[in-house]
Length: 258
Length: 109
Image (cartoon, rainbow over all chains, first blue to last red; front, side):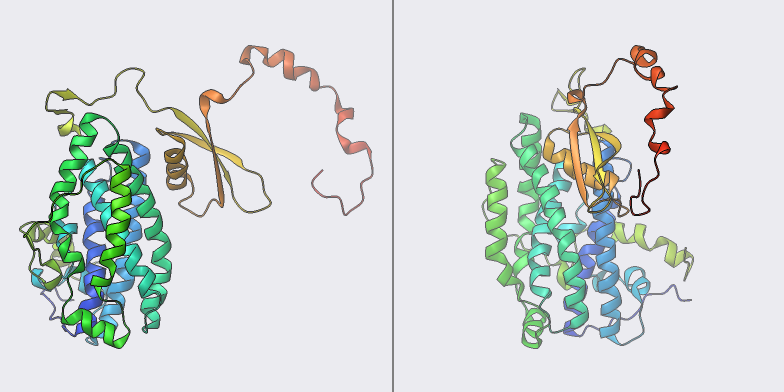
């Protein structure tokens, strides 16, 4: 079995699917860091459940990306044997888990985004992707409700909880433009019926987030000129560290399985 | 978590009497069956109690419906009354419907 990095076929459809699959994968890894550390036992289980849902979605998408790629790569090879530049997740999900407020706010932002994306992917011309989306949509709806309720509780809670979740919002909001900017990968997917332009998700996402943040009495930060670019493989300084954690076992013990 | 306890001079640790209330969880495994008590959990409000019950008690397909009840809303008998309440039923075998011939179509009596 190999431990060296695989060479990724960067066909547009592969990139489109990996952008979603890697976003699920990396967020699951970040959420997994809460296991045994959440503020209360019940929420510890709830966060692990969300992480496991995301792992399931990532597995399905990476497997499918491997089929689209046509190079015989399976989900494990794609998850553990790529170099940093070949991971195409949103930068938002690779940021450190921060405090509880940051994690639940990020979950709410990503769940709202994924829910809107799954709704549209359920009508994909790619039957496999449509089936994955149909199953994942139910999971994303719950993630959005559970995380969104926490954002409201913290925002409309004590002075301390409000200060923390507002700080989280100020940090996370700078990574929002990446969720919606559109490029050749998007255009190709739309032309083939694979999936929507991500810019189509922006208006409904902002509307749903505005409703949530309004109920939480939080103020939406002013737009920033900062642009992140993880979905094109250019990551933050945090990405290398999380990959080191994730890849250690497969690199040290190639082909190792449970 | 623990390294965030002291931040900005605010002690965020729960004080006595500030713990989230306890809730009893009842889960119905499938339509037609009754809700069965399966455990308890702490939650700040009813909505959170339902969500956490879902996450803690139905993650292996145990349920299709959940009830939660604040534990302090449940009225229970005094354990000291156990002998007075329940022992007298011990020798009343005639209260069991075992002395009647039941049609085969009547199940689960």
